[in-house]
Image (tube, rainbow, N blue to C red; front, side, top):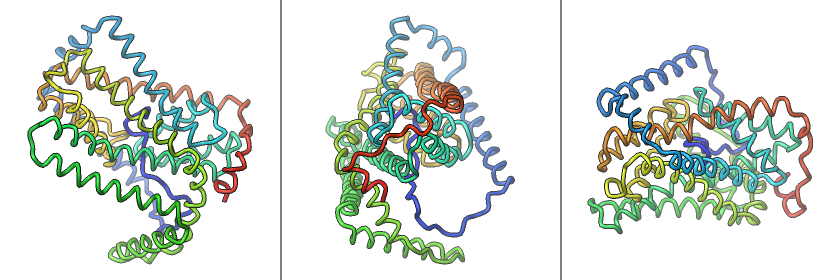
Length: 373
């Protein structure tokens, strides 16, 4: 998936919510200030306590042109991989259109405080300008969000299981992996039952509404209503696409996450962090748990937080401080900074290009009834 944080909370379109809180300018300024303080503190700690800037720069300058070329190739594959996911999840969307949409929204999500919400709105705007209905856009957002979250939650489980099978220290690793796997399987089973049975979908919505109402009651807010209808509508919208494309969605989403992991492993190896120092399974575990931190919106795209988690984990696993810092910063430059730059050009292209306006083809008959419900 092109960036560490493009994957966000899955919105259920039309889900009735509690009364909206007014977003004040003061709150936004506080959020920006907190993000900046966290970011400065993290990078100050890294370069003062973990590695010297001159050592990091010296490590980066050791790369050969072949290593740079291989890094560039892996980076391009990483970018392309999420465009494939979006094409599969959005019937009628072209591959080049997917690149413009992905890079534009990723740039917003990764560079602006609370950028996830703005990126969501931009997704609807771009797809609408191309002739995709709100229902089709919602299906795309929901499906990609669910599949990305499943893979993101499943990766730490897989990594812990691999480490346990390799005999890595820590007897609780296998137990934690099994417990996490049970939770993930449970979530997938509930999701499958929602898609399979409309009555079950309504029951899930009713139960979730009761839980949300009891939680809101503790804060003096009124109950939510209509969640059963919302979940049923969600089910009707996605069931057709999932039945026809769940295999391709699963394979492409896993490939997208694997491509991102491959960029990190490649950066570590070309910088000199060998497999003997930090094995590929250890890298996978550190990578997986670091990505989970993006759920905490301290900074846009987890910038600073992700770097600190990766550096701390990799150095503790046995990597040299200077080379690890250099590799992590190189990885983030390729998967965080570069997509933002591409996104700026993609956004300007979308604003200027009129040839795609209103050109979305109609849905195939097997999908139209469900998606447009």
